[in-house]
Image 1 (cartoon, helix red, strand yellow):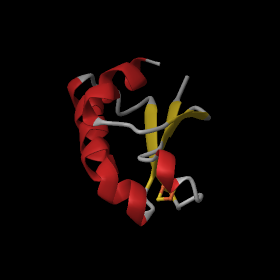
Image 2 (image 1 turned 90 degrees about the vertical axis):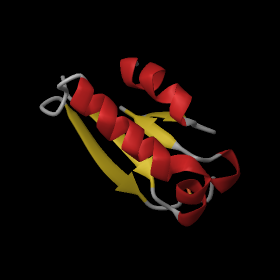
Image 3 (image 1 turned 60 degrees about the vertical axis):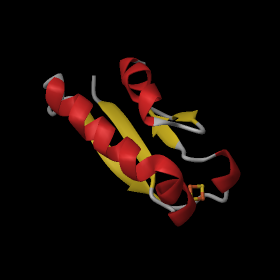
Image 4 (image 1 turned 135 degrees about the vertical axis):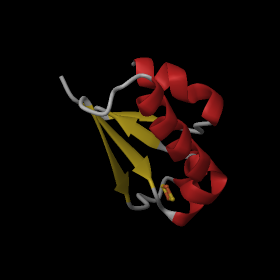
Length: 76
Ligand code: FES
């Protein structure tokens, strides 16, 4: 099964941490050889900036995401 990750690339989420979170996700994928089963896409601002940074994994929304949370989020 493919895991679909969407990272909010709106300016608020990006500035509040999604820039680092995106790098952490890419690193996690590389470290665990998940390139074939994970897709990453950016999303635009959905006016939920106050609960950002937002990351959506297979339709499940994670809010106030920090780099420390990425491994758990990736494990599902
Ligand atoms: S920038 Fe992510 S919800 Fe607005």
